[in-house]
Amino acid sequence: MAKMGVRLTASGDGGQKMDTQVVKRADDRRDLKNSYVEYTAPAKGLARFFKREQKRGLIVNLSKGGVAFRTGEPLAEGTQLAVGLIFPGGKARVQAKIEVRWVREERKIGTITYTHVVGARFTEYSPEAWEQLNRVLREAQA
Image (cartoon, rainbow, N blue to C red):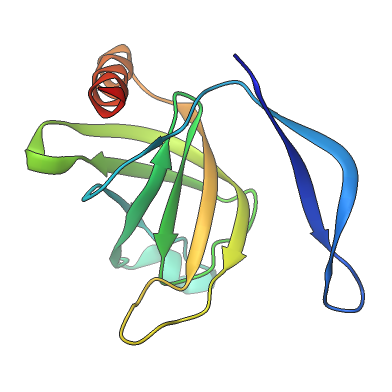
């Protein structure tokens, strides 16, 4: 069953206004705890020829279509990343490719290092990764 939502966009005065575009969500999202996304931050210029730092983000929610996660850095919309999704107890590690669809900055509270929430859609994964992802989603539903 598709979920409906309204996309909010920033207005020129710093507020938010409703856009007439309706966002349809084909898949139910599952909130996950103690689950992470690992990725290598995209590099620019000469830095792309050197070893890049592995980053880790905290998964907010997950669906068959994509993932939302907290990270300590902004990622540009349209960025393509190869990621590893790590679930509690080491039950599964799913390798996939994602495309960043949106980024929201969050207010930093205390020592929390996650300052952005990223929404991304899956663009590629293996049949084995698909099975693992489905198993994790079924267990999160129970």
